[in-house]
Length: 234
Length: 296
Image 1: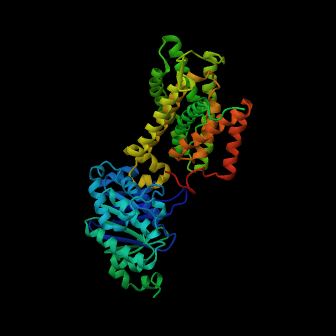
Image 2: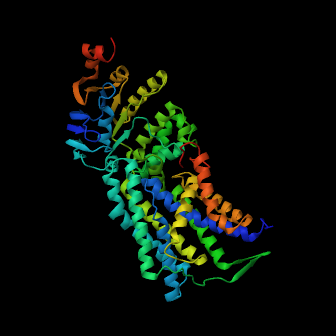
Image 3: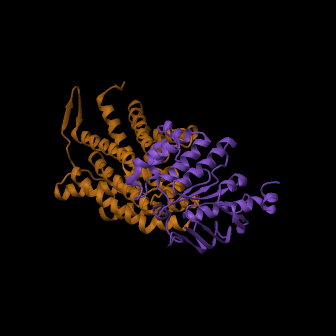
């Protein structure tokens, strides 16, 4: 569904990603794991169109997105829930969600989608009138994901969704990701919590210093001695 | 001793608040959506004033009608300035500090050019025209009709703008862009289009404000700058990028100015404005209303 070929990108002159290639299969949960500074967030921001591509290409559902504007990517069904959530702090929860459905194809479905999101995250319904900035970290992450889903994406990109969450909250977040995939949305997730991620993912890639160093089914990677030693501390 | 409860002072404060509100709204919109400080904002207002003056002098058509022409022309001028000048700056500089510095220089240039082109074309003499200056009695106090018209139109425009930003899809996108530019891109806001709309709208409102001001004050090539400064004070009072807060800031500044001058002398006017400016920057740089970095 998403094909990234020999992608190089980064901030300013220094490249962060060095010829990265990966595929996200339709209907899958695909994970990209790696340590801090490996280039995971850079990859996500480049796929969403926030950072320019230096070389290589991004193809989504058969159409070339390499040079597409960010809003065109949303319109085609791609949505990124960014690292740090970036909710609109002064907007109420409901306004945040309305802003999520600003893409032309999503606007007619706004009301129905809003109810779906409140069903998926009942706490957001309770807090619908509250400013986004007053929510707890876990609630803000739910809001960010719900906002990302408001544009009715076919591919949801999640950048470090568990960052800064209490372990119990993080655990329910991983369950939520599985439920989202169950609604027919393909998920591409970047995470530092490698064990929990590999437990829910189908396919996984390991990124180190801007290069893919390992790939395989998530189950295989969980058993891989190198991964266990380097990332799981076993 | 002045009567602080007189209707005249109240009307004067409300009229000034409506004008400051309008002028500041455009400045705030442009700053909020692209971090450009439009120091040429007062000059757009001045152009609006001249348009109203010449339309009235040459054809007898009053500013209540020429303001629609000002709206369209100033809006188109805004789109041209954005497309030809500002977009380059926004694209070529990567850092926000550079954007602010470069845009400041660029728009100072635009401001000086506009002042001098008008001074060359129409001389530097201040001009005024008689329009709706009959006196209206309301209860015990008297005002000239033009003030009431300016007040009515000014307030109506301010509230229309607030409703537009609260209720329309475009308004939601612009507010999203002001609050969190990266997130706005991610939810699918067409940022380039919203910037163009904001720039155009900001200029259009300034042009209309100029028409209204020309009913009360003389127009001259250099009339704009004090309004630019007042608008800066207003948006700092209300919180940078906070559109509704700006209107409240306009009311506060207008009240301080009108009642302050009434209690002292006219020569205190600038001292009051700059005094408020400095006081706010020192004690409440985030604005009088909103919390820390909250923008609505």
